[in-house]
Length: 181
Image (cartoon, rainbow, N blue to C red; front, side, top):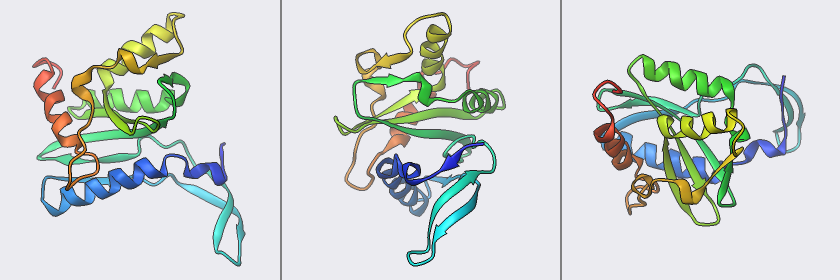
């Protein structure tokens, strides 16, 4: 069972951008996407500041976000990296299994990866991720490189949205084989 401490706020900048974007999507009736909270059991907290300082995760979380975009069920996880190689250890087996099962049920699964040093966000399709993951399982690299990513799947930043990932989702839907969607 994992524990939570101050490192639990990693990725909060990315999540703030996604949450802001999701709120704009909801207001414009483009999508309804919600952040899925990770269930925790508080163990210790600072009474003065009313902050939890130690907690245990009740169970493994699946993905960070779930919802629907114009009738299409979507789920995705948000991850950050400060260098040009993304470690595959940041992706968990139970998440990958859940996302694969989700796609088998007709949903769309993806990762939003934020390269903090570049201030760029990438929409990583599950299918593309699995090529890197399978390569690792076969004894290859335990990471993938920025240079290996498809330039068409970088998420545009627009004035009204911090990360306009729906445009990239549209490209994903267009590029899928009929049997994939």
